[in-house]
Image (cartoon, rainbow, N blue to C red; front, side, top):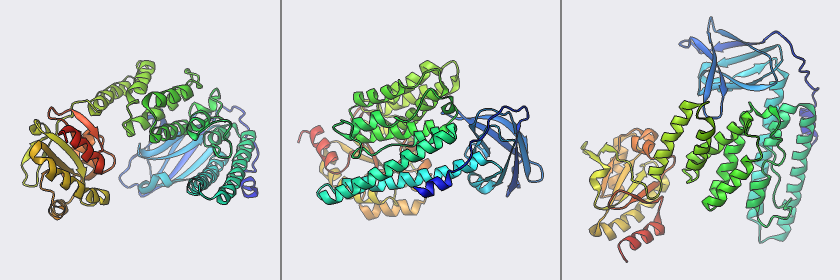
Length: 450
């Protein structure tokens, strides 16, 4: 623990209000075509551009009003930014290369130096936590190993709590960053819970004071809520229980705080990414609360709800048109009248290629009974695509626009990993998603009465 204390022995910063703005001077390299630099704020749903300044002779500068500490983002585009905390330090220097702006270095800011050091420690804690959790779960048949790992868990929990206490006493803003990243092991702290699901759902944010205004402009609120929701989704809870846990945790945040918007945004982002059935519920909650304040964001969410509804089981699969290996355009709706497996794959995808023999087998079994397959390739090279079709004996219909992950059908269906499949009935409605191997064969046997 001494190494942690050595890193974080620093004096409390004085936040006495001053009239002069914070001067942020930027030195740039590799920015021959870039003429402007931008100051952004992250709202939880997008980046809002606050200010634009010109780049002159490889330099740029912002003057930002002093305030309580809060995160800003400086960069040349929304996806090329460097986060930094700006409060009441009079001057901050930033050195960046336009080719790797996220790696820009910050000088002259004790607060940002402390934050960067803190991230290193938090990442180390996360790595150790994951390692110990995996070891504990794989050693359940070895009581001696379990006791040894449990002791290590308790020691790491002590280190986490010591860090939290130390930072909270020295800097309230960074203290909330630590609080959002402090989760204690369930085996070491069961607290009467019969399993970790309830413990995780109700104790994940146990050290966070949601009334603290330091959370209102803190992107870690968004990130922690995204992680929290993703974990609950991955567990595979019933939709009602999943929703209840998230609602209960949201209820601990005052709804008039900006932190509530960040938290809800993080949850929605995770639900959309995992295509969880509760996405629509929480997206509508956001729309109801922020439609006047954020009309464009809410309009976008409404469209996503419509798409997610269409992509859910029972929805009508959206049509798309794409070229087959001969260059002939074909569309999904032309296959109506048959049960269709839409199979997103690629020649370079090992799991896809390993699954192909299973698809070949069920195709041969059911093709004469009204079963068809449409392979949608995320390849970029036509030759590799065609060679894989021939090598794996995939004798069904195939299409691709050779755009890789930007494949238009994959974008339409929000495919973020492959293999990915949709099973459609003869009317084009979605019967199931991501069926493979025995699960696919069982479903087809059910459909065709075997």
